[in-house]
Image (cartoon, rainbow over all chains, first blue to last red; front, side):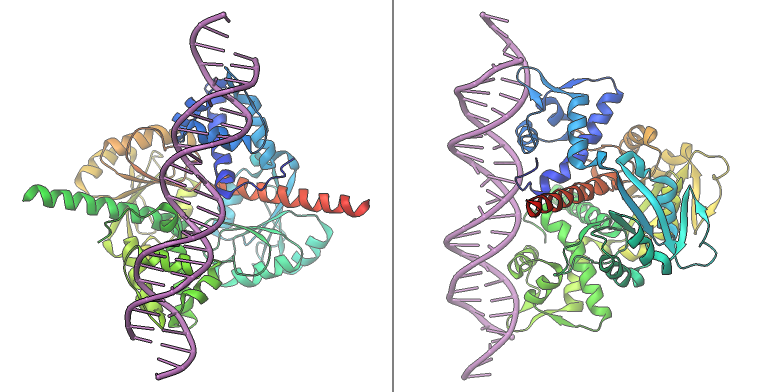
Length: 222
Length: 222
DNA sequence: TAGATTGTTAATCGATTAACAATC
DNA sequence: TAGATTGTTAATCGATTAACAATC
């Protein structure tokens, strides 16, 4: 399975497909064509079929795709059924918000432990997840198999903590710090959630829209 | 300015450039070549020069780029100096976490107000931002010019609240709900922050890595 | 000046779209 | 069966990379 290298663009669309398929299931739709799916996601039917064909044949000529079947395939491709484990490093505001709201188990992840330096947090349990001191991180990682570290430490600590994690054998980091971890070296898998990058992209398009509107108003005034 | 349509790929790299330039400024670097910048960001020098050339000429032959000058250009392209305004809709966990931690003003946005349905929140002020009831949203929007709505309501309310916002003239939504707002119609600018999409992409690459490792181990066993 | 590095044009590479035979 | 829709091959389009003249 999964032999051909699949492009990042395709991978990034998979979670969207999954989400849409879940929505369809909820509304009782059990069958969909690439045409209709494309329509609902703003993609071409061609692209959708092309994307799926990277991983196998999930549809049926003349019928389309069975929603739950397709859903299960995509979930499996994304690794939802693999029982991946995670730890969270840095129980500040964002770390706590994630522990509080984000349902790791919905996406196949078990959040096994959290780590922080604040003495008043160490030894406590938050939402069923034990919080340990940063000094026990290394031994914890050698005793437990952890797939992903959720990095939610303050900006200043980000690089050094990330380096520590990779040194201790973590090979994937879900990075919530606003710091560039993707350097030239290291083959750690890094997935960034940069709020500010996201807002700034939005800002660009808003600025563009404002310029267009202004230009149009200008032309009309003449 | 900004006449040629610039590709989304380029726009998404701009905030990364900005962030890196800020890091460089902090470490006292005031001059950089496209070669070195590419090296630090994992991009080719060609791509970086190509990207910048969409917006003008910011460098100097034989010298490279002046860090603060380039920084200022990119910030301006992204609209940081435009004084955009925002409201936040839905003061739940994620909404509160954003108000608490995310410094809107760092990116040129003024968060003017927040809205929620919970009576105990209405009329209070959180971090200097007044919280109003959802029923006053419409009149607020007609009295105040707001550029962006931050959507942090529960999943179930997402679509209807989003529709209301666009009906009331909001043309950009920063969407934190795990719901697909980018439908076929409507020309609202939507920027999504989908935590689960992000984690699932990461999950895919972890799964791939595990498969590779297993395959390698298999070959070695033979 | 000589070396370095830009901005830009041309070449390559990859991703999306179109088309269609296969078939449910 | 006829109509619908897939999976896949070929065509197009766009994005990245390479190359190089211009010039600081």
